Length: 298
Image (cartoon, rainbow, N blue to C red; front, side, top):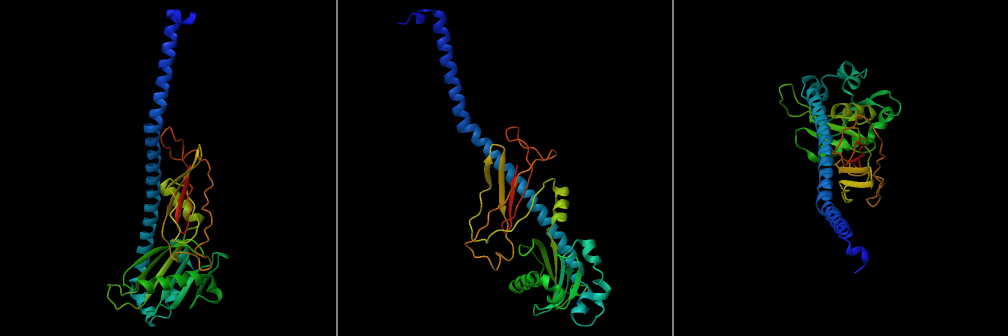
């Protein structure tokens, strides 16, 4: 036996050191097998709840747009206009673009019963000019992709009831469509009235003010691609949370289904961001859309 083991004091310190090492190893094992998975699950739950808040806010915005759309669609004047009995309707209601400023609208489209454009009015996103035409051509050609999407969507659904959906290309928009009826709700429908609200920087700032969550939106590839994971840890203090939402059209007409651009998500710091548990640190939600997927980073 070595001489230092003959000393009771040395044997006590050796036993104490071995006990401490075993306790540390047990704590590390418990943390790895029990504590860490629980914290990761808490992170996933928190991310999912925040994404739920964003989705509910978008659903509420769609609901508000639908109510505005209904007010204009279920109206005797709109009904008479589509029946050809109120030719002064555009000059009385749509000429100066005030509706678009007050309601933050980008496009208003009247479709006849054959789903053909009857009147197209809106704000050109490139020039900011207000245009009104009988078809999405000439000064209104900028609206052609969105009008075509409205036509396809309404013609496909056919049911004489409201429709709301997210539009991904060429610009991100919320869209609502209602059948045009008399003020008392009677018909038959004279056609359809569709409204689109752009999901631009102004809209994102307003939604951030109502939810406390900052996020962005970016179109990606079609719905045939696999859904992205809910959470991706990109570094010790940087995570990306993602949720895909359906949009119409499901992909750009000129984008093959095998083409999948990366889902962006550049992290940034914000002192007033909501905080998670002490182990995960502050979060700032920055969301992107991949044909409507929401990517949030902390």
